[in-house]
Amino acid sequence: NIVLTQSPATLSVTPGESVSLSCRASQSISTSIHWYQQKSNESPRLLIKYASQSISGIPSRFSGSGSGTDFTLSINRVESEDFSIYYCQQSYSSLYTFGAGTKLELK
Amino acid sequence: QVQLKESGPGLVQPSRTLSLTCTVSGFSLTSYGVSWVRQPPGKGLEWIAAIWSGGSTDYNSALKSRLSISRDTSKSQVLLKMNSLQTEDTAMYFCARSYVYYGFPLGYFDFWGPGTMVTVSS
Image 1 (cartoon, rainbow over the protein chains, first blue to last red):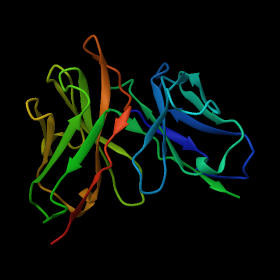
Image 2 (image 1 turned 45 degrees about the vertical axis):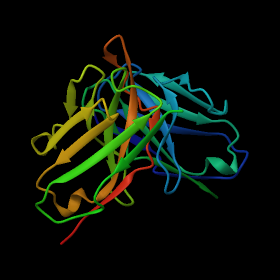
Image 3 (image 1 turned 90 degrees about the vertical axis):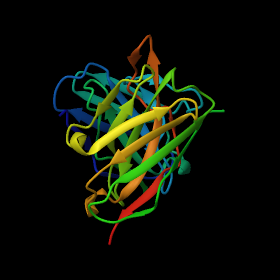
């Protein structure tokens, strides 16, 4: 199984700060990584597909980068609605796996 | 518009079989894949199984012996059965859509249902 390790587990920030969330794969997965946002008691929402491809309707402050084993989700100038949990997910293997998540919280 | 809606029994006794239904609208099951993903309370996401536009299936290898996924295209429904339930199967169960490009599944989930909570308890 491909293991995805997300860091940090929790990130405390103030609105207006820019942040980077990391996702590292246990083997090279090209750009087969996708990012989701999950707010409390809601289903996940797709933010970025294939490492860096934008999704219609998602604010432009969200961007993704990386290839191989190291990936980053960046949020430019965090807004109050962004405080939630972020998950990465790989589709390189037909056994899809998710990272454990990074919780973005208000400092 | 695209919608997915899960339904299930809510409470299941240990060792019994779970049956879940995902009813979709706004797209065709012969053009898109549908997966089941679960989330235990306070924990992360786990992909369980998928059925693709052509009817082929994939399963999480750790759960495969207990799972069966199927579909009824006339009803726009995807069905998941999981047997030998244990307390650790207690979770929110989501169904989610995947795009299939010329028969090749694009492995991201662009639409999700709200989820159905399953509690395994006697």
